[in-house]
Image (spheres, chains in turn red, cyan):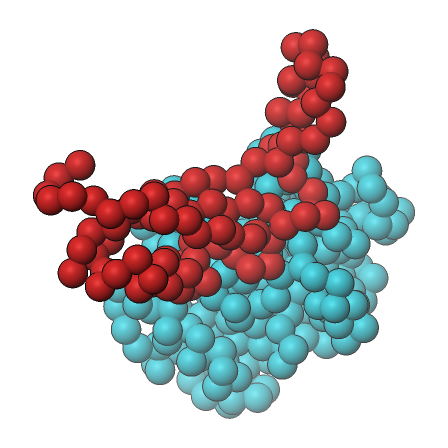
Length: 90
Length: 235
């Protein structure tokens, strides 16, 4: 078993209204960033877990996303490997 | 009739719901989210609130509670299940109702009375209303914007599973009368079998004339009436 850190990114599905993103978009425009034409807000979740190898860690994270971390009706998710964690702590 | 009011850490409409059930003459008991077994009940209700602080998504953590397995089984066996506000969100997260409740399009928490049109008077929960009747019932939510995929939305409308819709004083489902951006002004829906109802407005807060409206009473009397005719069990 090794320890891995995984980053999960959950984001609103394309086409769905993202009122939070819209509010930030307007705010950026009013700050003078007129070139900003779209903002979408998602969330990043960092998970440290034990797994046999990288593939197993990624697979486990995928299952977590489908079961709890993302709502398939409104959100998409991406799972990426940050890296192996050496020793204890961090 | 004996009703379970399931409470989660962060439920805050549980006592109102308890009182509402009592007011229509039914027996009621709180069931903590870690308890198991709902067999002794004839109906199950999930109250409003902010279970688990709405962390991750409203209702997402609560639906993993031990009792939810029993709620799912209770619903699968045809038992009536009512989810109000956060209860509705939990039912969607648990897959007992389709779709999801997203952040209000206005980005603000909305807490005020709304007008609802009764779309179905032939459900377990609405027999004492009349189709087309307008109810005044409060809402109090930040995430009540009902969304689902095209196919689900078409099925909901096609099968007549929209039970309540936000309307104006003329009974029209206008954009101005929609408090949260819900698709087709949807305020409440049932599952395919009709025994699970989820709604964002709070009928349990519309039980006393002194507090502004008694339009919520009908929902609870309807359920009592339909259970006493179908089950003929304990009153």
